Structure formats: C-alpha cells, structure tokens
Length: 354
Image (cartoon, rainbow, N blue to C red; front, side, top):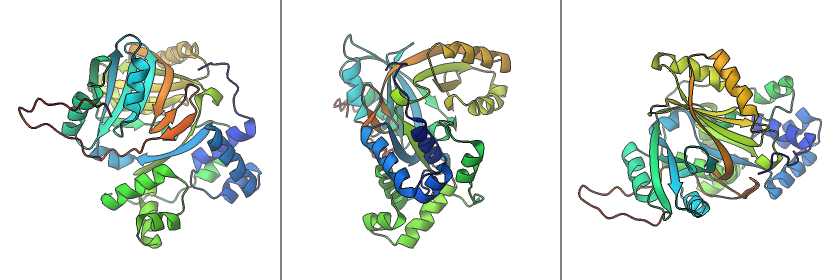
C-alpha cells in the first residue's frame, strides 16, 4: 500500500490509542479520557470499524501460549500464484497471519496448533500442500517476548494512557484452561467488547461465572485483546521483518531490550540459525536504515541475518484484509481445532489447503 495514504484524523488516532490502552473500558471512561461524550466516542469507533480502518481482536496469550506450538513458515510460489496461495491459507483457522513480502521468501505465514506433532502435520499436510507452493521452510518459535497487543499509536499523553491502563495486581494462581474457556475466547474474538451478560447468554452459563473467569484470564494476560489500525491510515504503514542472530547467553537481555523499542510489534525466539525474529512498523521503508543503525549501536553483538518488507498483509491475527490493509472479515482463531495426524506409514495427504 502507498506510504502516502492519508492518516486517520487526530481525534480518531487518539480514540484508537485509548482503546489500545483499555479495549474493554466503557464508552464513558474512554470518552472522559479524551474529552468526548460516551455517545460520540462510540459513534466514532463504529464508523472506524464500518470502514475497516480499525478493529479489535481477542486471542490466547501469555501462559496459554505455552500450551500451543507456533511456527513461522516461509513459502515460495509458482509464478503468478502468490496471492491465490495467500488467500487459500488465509481461510485456515491455524494460520494466524499471512504476509506477501519482498525478501528471502514470497509469503511469510504464522501457524499455531495445539501441539508440536499437530503443527508438523498441519504444515506438511495443509500449508505446504496448497496448490502453487513450490518451497516451504519452517522455523519454530519456542518463546514470544512481545507481540502486537503491546504496540501503541502513541497519540494520547502518557498520563491519559496510565489512567486508562490502571490494572489490579495480577493473581499468581495457575491458569487452568478448559472447553468453556476456549468458547469464551472464541466468543470474544467475534466481539471483544461484548458484555459478560451477553457472553453468558451466548455460552449458556451464569453471568457471574463468565465475569469471574473473564476477569481472571484477562488479568493474567491469558486472553489478549488487541486494537488494530489499517496500515493505509496508520502513522506507521510499513512492516519490516528482521531475522537476527545473537549469542545464546545474550538472547534474553537482547529480546527484552528490543521489546521496549516503540516501533517493535513482535519479538520472538527462533529455533533456526537466526535465533530472533523482529517485526517493526515504520513511517516509511527507508526508516529501517536508521532503525538498524540504532540497534547496532545499542546492541553491538546483534547480527542482522536477513530482512523482508511487507508488500501486502492478507491476514493479521485472524482478520482478513483488503489491498489497503482494511479489515474485511475474520477467521476464528481456533488454534485448538483438531489437526489430522497421519499414522505411521500413512502417505495420504489432505491437499485442500483450507
């Protein structure tokens, strides 16, 4: 998409930033922080969603991700087939994100499954088997240091953000997870601001139970709610992915340093020769040069192994996007959906790509 596309109006950017800080806050709370009435704040948000300029996404995070397996799959395609492949993969519930990139591959795909065995089966039997794919290279991610729910537009003041982000201390009891929690996360994925009463009606359980469980999962970060903005109207419309190599004994401190860089959307450990992946959002493609120079000065032991610039985002954490990056639909992020795993000696492969 064009780097010259017009950004959202300042008031809309502030509203997005406020919702990023407190995605389930009441409209009166959000409006008060911004100097708006509750009705005005809600109306402006509804207009953004209607245009596909902004949206909310809910998904498993924090401790729940340790119960899931994540891989980044780099794909090359037959000439002219890259978008057909991308659209086929975007319909897959185990594929969270699909990006057409200029770099070491043509498509970069994030795949999540309930276990390592199922992840391998899904990559081999579905992702790599989509018609038009000529090559697939898979790298596992054993740990996510930061991800997109922490990225901010940075349009409101630090004081406003702190007031909206105030949270009670997190409880240290272990997170349990069952079928009811899975249903709760999927329902929030459809409407991240839905009330506990409405969730209770949809799920067929008591409102008090839903409210208690929802507060516990949100408070622990086991459910993440992310407010996104279309890239064509964003102050940072360019996505760059960097593959990094750092000494193993510096991995933790390096990742923590990178995670607080404002431009960073994601920092994940990798199982390959490059042991960190960094995703940054920038105002323009040439800004990556200054970013890399800054990283080299701050972290001189860090080696940039490769880089890619996103040409088009086709899917972002379950949200389907048009050519301008606007939200057009969604695919439920049901990472726990069953993945057929062939028995030993079974050479049959489901090649539907869906």
